[in-house]
Length: 298
Image (cartoon, rainbow, N blue to C red; front, side):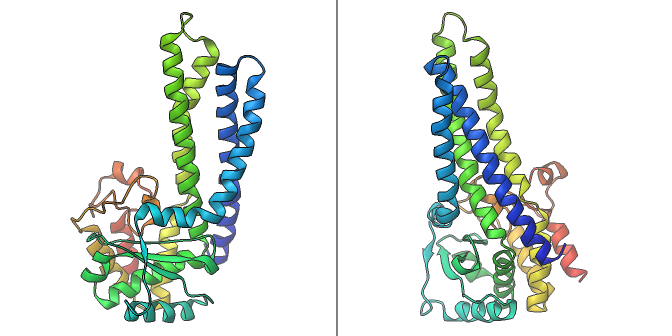
C-alpha cells in the first residue's frame, strides 16, 4: 500500500466510523425511549439521538485532538525548552514535505512512548514522554519523531483521534442503558419483556461494536509508518533500536488507557517483546518483534 492509498483509505474509514457511530447511538436511543417512554416515544428519542450523535461526530472532528492531549495530561513545550528536539522535528518536516511544523507536547512520565494527534497536518501535534527524551539517544528520538510524522502525513492521526472520542461515547451510553435496564428488570413484576431483553443485548453488544471500530483502524498503518520513517531518516536501525527499548521498558505509562492505547507508537498496555499470539490477536498494534524484524531486513 502506498502513502496515497493509505490517505484515501483513512478518509473512507473516517466517514464509515462516523456514520456507524450515528447509527449505533440512534439505535440505542430508540430502544431506551421505547422502554422508558412507552410506545412511540422511541422515535422522538431517536431523533434526539441522531442530533446528539451528529453533533458529537462533528465536534470530535474539530476538538478530539485537544481532548486526547487532556486525557494524556500533555503540556505544550516551547522551542527554547527543547531546541534540539524542535530542530530535529523541523528538519524531518522539511524532508517529508509537511509544510507546517506540528506543535510539540510533553507527558511528564518516565515511560518511553509517543503519539501524534490532530485532524490534519496543519493542526497536528507530536507528543512524547519525558522518559523517551531521557532514555533514548538522539538517533532513536529522531526515528520516533519520523514515525509520528508519517502518521501525520498519512492522515492516520485524524482517524485514530476521532476513534478515541466516538468509541468512548458509545461505551458510556451503552453502560448507562445497561444499568438502567438491569434496574428496570429487577423492579418490574413482569420481568421486563422482549423489548427490555433487546435493550440489554444491545447495551452488551455496543461496546463490542466499539472495539470493532477500533480494529477498523488497520494495524498495517504501523508497518507503513515504520517504513516511511526509515526512508525519511535513512536509518531503519534507529527505529528498530527505539522499538526494542520501548518494548522492554518496565515503566508503566500512568495515563495509558484502552481508549487511547491505539494512538501510541507501541501499545502501552502490552509491554512484552515476545507477547503471546493470543495477546497479539487482540492488540491494537502488530507484534513489535515483527516490526523490528522488518526494519532490520530493510
